[in-house]
Image (cartoon, rainbow, N blue to C red):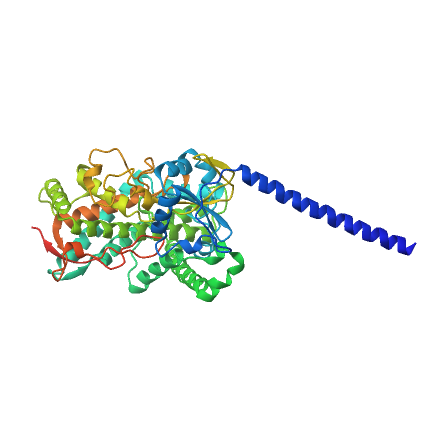
Length: 503
């Protein structure tokens, strides 16, 4: 009897194992057949384990552009085990950010933003859903709407005037325009978002480290079992250190505002900054769920870091290109001089009259989108794009830099020619997919208006007041235009110039 029971037990185990084996084979076969039926986008050859990671290069936007010229405007790459769709044409971008915008409205879970931005509970990196909608609406409704942006006009004009005074005091000596434009934008953003400006080398260094770490390649995102490489390289420690330093700074900002409230020194509704607005929403429980302290700090960090870093980078690129193109510089100076009419400075009310200024800024953003590879999206379900099947949970990168230099869209795409925009309806607000410096759709940048008015005012006034030239006899054509390897497209070398008063 015992032997028979043992035999039945062995038979039963064999039967279960056989059923499991057949099930696995059937599953693999069905999966293979389904995959064969799907029409996937073309893919560059990949290596075992790392996939296409080795093809990123030091400038991923340039690497992707070169690969797209060989494999097409829609490529399916693999970074480790993660499928990555790379879009390098206006048509592909439109499909992703307009036609199927909702299906691509999610953000992938990324380790470095999770570390730096409080578990990605900000506007930029939080997953698509009700929380993201509420957090975004806070910034859009209370800080970035038209009336609110216009209400900060005096702050922008005052800070621009102070920068002009600093340049005037240089007395024809060499000045670092990269540094000056950084502090201009930083002071404006700080006063609007945080209530006052914050100066100092430590502050500059902290923002630079934040941007550098945010743009670093995190192996663990793509090959989880190789996460130890990020620990070994020091990336994890750097991210935690930057997050700790920023948290201490932001805690100080919030406590400063709370302390003023406790003393009855709060701002009037008209003079409120972003921190005041967020604290009011938290106090009044105005959005249907508790606004946590970390969420408040994450939104502040979003507005502050993104607003400062991208805008000043674009300003530096614009002035650099104008130096390299004296004809364009002269034409733009003629326009600002005619509009300025001898006034002490160009005011925001003057900007609407400056068509060539606006064309110059569009041309700068075409050639140098502040974030050349727009923040990655992730498909929430299977979707068909341009005849190809894109599986759910595929990450998506839109190469705005490559689209801005696409020869099928732009005549002489590598040339700096603002005239191309003079009689053109193409704009940068997300409705024209040939020009996408701020993205488009639900996940487009909500701070376009806020950034552009700073850009226009600063550029108009620098050219209105000064002739800008390179120092030490350096010729315009020799200006170093190399770029950093970061999430933001920065000029690698600081822009050192001589500024001679025009009047």
